[in-house]
Image (cartoon, rainbow over all chains, first blue to last red; front, side, top):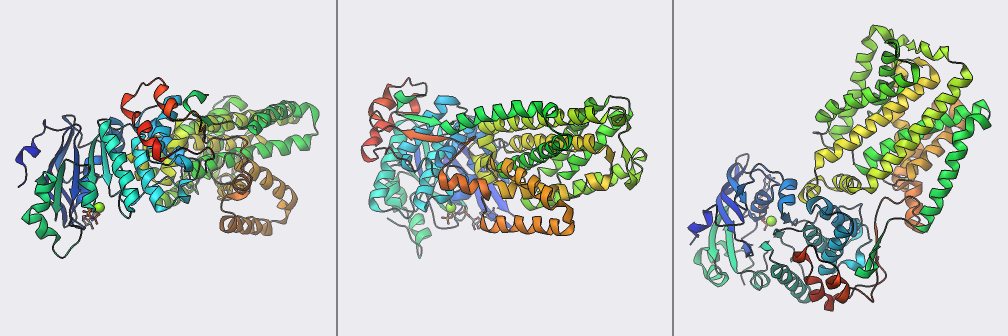
Length: 251
Length: 368
Ligand SMILES: Nc1ncnc2c1ncn2[C@@H]1O[C@H](COP(=O)(O)OP(=O)(O)OP(=O)(O)O)[C@@H](O)[C@H]1O
Ligand SMILES: [Mg+2]
C-alpha cells in the first residue's frame, strides 16, 4: 500500500527520492521514497536493522546515498553535508546520544544556536534557555554533558537539535526506556513543537506513544517502505504484522 | 544583562575582573623589565615567554580543537629557518624574525589540507612525519650547511644589551598578542564550535558546525604561534642547527606543560609553562634524568590528574580566572510566565511552548 504520490518531489518539504544506500555488498536502503509535508508529523517503525536510522542519516546528510536524491523546500540538497543541511533548517537527534562531553549542557545548545541557528548574543542565549526549558533540562544547564545519565543525554539530543531553530526535526528513538510519566512528558513536548509548526519525523519502537503525536505512520522492513498511511491502517496492515512476527513492538 | 528575561549568562566573574587588572599591572612591570632587572633575569623571562607561547598554542590545538599533534616542532623549526632566509636576502633582523613566522604560518595552509583529512591517531603521526620531512628538506638547503647549521650573522651586528632588550620585548609582545588572540577566539563562536568538534566531530556537523574551517583556523594559528616561538628562539641563540630546532623535545615540552597545567583550560597551560620553566631552571643541568623525570611526571599527571593542576583546582573550588565558557543563572521569580512571553520576540516559532510547558518544570534557582 505504498503511496505513489510520496515520490513526487515538489509535494513535500523534505523528500527522499528513490534512495539507495549500500555498504559494500550490503544493501541497507533499497529504493526508498519518502515525503514529509510542511507541518506534518510522521512516525517510522520497523524491526531492528530495517534501515530506519540509515534513512534518517541520508535525510540529515550524514550519509551520501549510493543512488537517489534528497530535496528540501524543492531544492536538491543531495550533495550538501550535514552541517549545511542543519543551517538550512534540518535538525536531528542521534539514536545513541552524542553529547559534547567536555562542554556544559548550556554550551552544547549554544553551539547549535550559534552555528546551526545562526544566532548570536542574547538571541542565542534566549533560544538555548527556551530549548532547555522545554526539555526540562534547565536544572542541569551548567553541568558538563559527560556527567549526564542516559535520560538526560536523550533530552539533550532534543534540546540541542531545537536550539538550531529547525524547520524539520528528525528524531531517532528519543523515547526508549521511558517510564509512563516521562513518555507522557515527551509526547506533550513534541506536541508543543508541532504547535510551533515544525515538521517532524520520529523513529520509535513504542508505537502507542508514537501514534499520540503523528498523523502518518511509515513501516520499513529490510530497506524498503512496506506500509505508509494513517496509523490505524498501517498497524492493521498484513505486511506490517508479517514483518513483526517473531519480533516485538506491535501495539 | 537580560535580567528581565529571567536569566543571565555569566562570562566574567568578580575574580576575573580583579585578576585582569592585576595582569595589566604585571604587564606594565614586565614591559619595563629590561630597564629594571639584571641581564640574566631578562634572558630567563624571554625564555619563559617562548615556553608560554608553545604551551598555549599546543593547548589551543589539542585541548580545544582536539588536534593532538606530535609534530609542532615542524613549525618551530620552519619559523627559524625562514627567518634565516629572509635575513640572508637582506631584510633586517627583527622584521625577518616576524616574516619567518608568517611564512611558516602560510606554509601550514597547504599542510593543513592534507593533515586535517586525517583523524586523531593518524593526524598525530602524520604531523610527526611532516616534522621529519621538514627537517630533512631544510638540512638539504646549502645555506644551512646540513646538520652543522648556520648563524644569523646580522644579529651579531646588534650590541648584546640591545639584542637582549629587543628579544625580550618581541617575545613579550608576541606572547601577550597570541594569548589575547587565543582568548578572543575561544570566547567567541569559534571556541564553542571547535570544542564541539573535539568532543564529537559528527555530532558537531549535525548541529551545523563547519568542521574543516574550524579546525583549520586553530591549526593555522598554532602553526604561526609555534613558528614565532622558533624564530624568537633563533633571536636569542643566534645559531640555527636543524637537529635542535626540529627536535621532538619541543613537542614533549608542550605536552608536558599542557598536561601538568590542565588540558582544555585557558589558564592551565600558563601555569604549566611557569612550572616547566622552574623545573628546567632547577634540574635542567641533570641531562638525561631531567628528561626521564619530565616524561614520568607527564604520565603521572595523565593517569591521576587528567584535568591537570588548574583543571583540578577549577573543578574543586569553582574558580575561573579567565573564563572562556558560559554560566547560566536563572531567577525563579520572573521566569518564565512573564519573562518568556514579554520579551521582544524576533523568532515567534520558538517561544510559545515555554509557558505551556512550565507547569511541570519549574526552573530551579540553583543550577547544577
Ligand atoms: N555505516 C554502516 N556501515 C555498514 N553497515 C551499516 C552502517 N550503518 C548501518 N548499517 C547496517 O544497516 C542495517 C540497517 O541499520 P539501521 O541502523 O538503519 O537500522 P534501524 O532500522 O535503525 O535499526 P534499529 O531499530 O536497531 O535502530 C543494519 O544491518 C546495519 O548493520
Ligand atoms: Mg536505528
